[in-house]
Length: 258
Image (cartoon, rainbow, N blue to C red; front, top):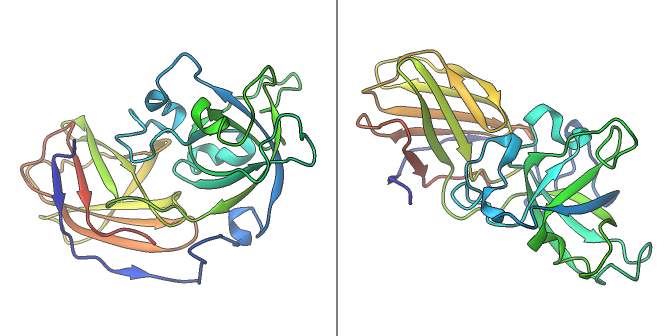
């Protein structure tokens, strides 16, 4: 449960127009329309909520993503920058009518990394692969002995409930912020923080996945954040965290990327 839901003033800049349905920016490494890939599933004996993996989401429900998640191969993961990005997938019925559900489509969030085995594995570069949570996989494929299916995918805008979430971790002057439930393109390119005693934004550095770090002592200050997504949109969240914050708490803004 979120500790606070604080209404913050926000400003957004739009350097380029992005469709709210399908993203088509060449800068993101994809084009409009469907691309070929393959999909498997993992976590058959695990709670889907725990599959936050290499992105650092402690719980995919707490992060706002539910069970429709996937680990993606390195070609898609981009060193962690893809964490939080959304993809629409359909099983390629023409290529595999036996195991694909016809016209079934699902949107998933990238929450983990599918590592290569450097021995011809499906997640080896340059392959584009989705290792999906089991509930998500069986929304587009039939249940049976088949462990892998051909899919078509495209990047789509993320539709989230509620605002962007900031989970504060770390200790003393080491601040680690997990940023989740991000709408729009979903994947963060850059992040900044500003304490109430500061006059300017301080850049955060990606520690790993969705976790961003700062070495400034931000305790006993209201905190504001500024995020720029990979598609170029920028949104500022003013005073989203009160000065009474403690490590381990999560705060949500009511403003959100669209």
